[in-house]
Image 1: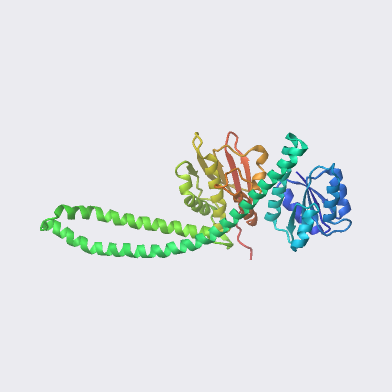
Image 2: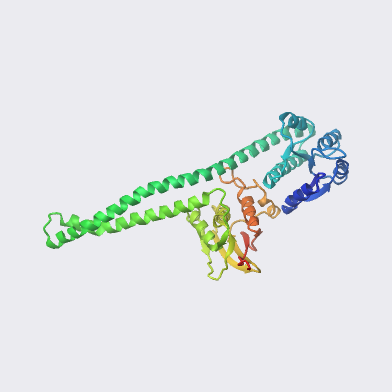
Length: 408
């Protein structure tokens, strides 16, 4: 899709161009309103990102001018502005603007708004192709209402996920406190049992109790039972600790680490998702060098990849296999995550990185996982890519720079 970016500030144009070309859009640039109008009429971009205030003709004037030409195809207008007054924004909407992007520009917000515009354009094309002009306006309004409602639901759900992360950390703390009482009781029971077992064994040897069989059964069963309690408590403590670390907000501490540790922790967190339907093949390597990063953030990346793989393979008749392996590529450690699912549609390989893009029903996904994962890996100065396998399935490759000791 072709997008026009018009702003007299070269730094802003350069930043927006970087964001858009990275996800596959073709970008046209203009430094003033008249140049933008020439590109709009000559090259037919489908989305125009216009600075509200710029020389020649400002963004709002271009919106009005374009709307006056009834023979022009539909174009989605996104105004760049620092204005926040309700009266001004309503005035812009009434004069042809469709949405706003506030300055300074946030990458995820911009791409989300562009994604909404793209979907409206696609809906417009489909409706126009199969309906008369009168029917088009009616169905177009309905489709736009549905898309607006869906976007609102996605944003609300994303906010809920953020709140859930905060709540999870607090919940993990409360569970840890309760586990402390359980541990105390279990160890006290163990201590008391150790004292009484000797007495009971002596009674059995002297055969001076009328309840010999009951005592003997207790001696046989009580030890393993208490061991099982301790084992269960330790497992819950481990899960809670991993949940607490995974849910920790703003965790940015970077240090030399083994990426395989993040992978193993992510596998433990997704164990319940994977265990009933997916066979996990994890090829650990002992010779992997360290990378420089945040274990918690990398763990989040692999949790997203593993859950996506499980969802993709859900219900398939063929064996569902999640294969995790490692490689050394130049100065990078590569983690390869392969599944045996249906793969990604060829025309969607680049789209999967867009915020809120998802093929899952609303109750199973928000479309944020891969977008967040890409951002995390890029902050680690690494790369993440997705391709389809030769036969079937999807392959994700995560490349992270090998840690080098700083030179004195």
